[in-house]
Amino acid sequence: IRVTFRGDNMPESEHKRSDYDSVKSALISTVIESWRFSRVFERLLTKLDAGEQNRHRGQFRWFLKKMEEGLEKAGLRIVNVEGQLFDPGMAATPINIDEFESEDELIVEQMLEPIIMGSDGVVKTGTVTLRKVQQ
Image 1 (cartoon, one colour):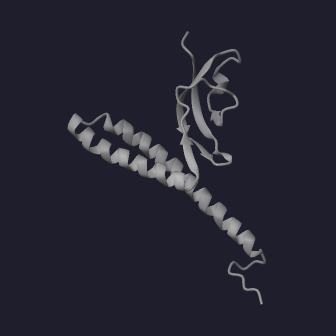
Image 2 (cartoon, one colour):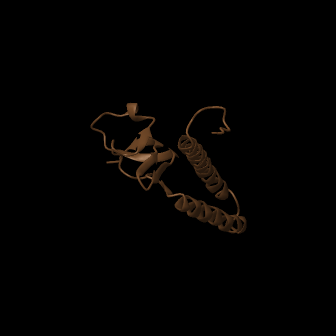
Image 3 (spheres, one colour):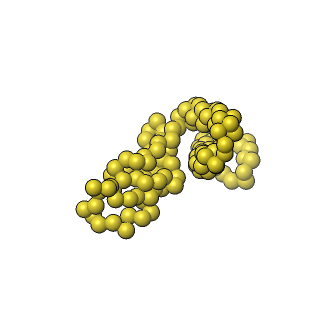
């Protein structure tokens, strides 16, 4: 007798894969939101006086360290390409590419969403804004 808990006839291996995909998706979503929050928090730190900055910066570094350790355990890492020359082969989608000519030399001005890499390659492409390289 086969018992199913989901009310379907999906084999157990497919349930495990589905559960794995759900957990992976939730982790990636959490990573992206944590990354966004860290960017906001970093900007907020610049508005504090030096003493407050130092106290909170230590906590911020601890948060980033723990986040990186957790990602490493999951076989993931965040890739930041801000300040790098833009290459159409980058694992990032530029939202303002239509503002430039094809011959323009472009640089990644800001990352809006990080690139997430896994042991097998790109897990999630990033989102970026571009600007012309100053000549």
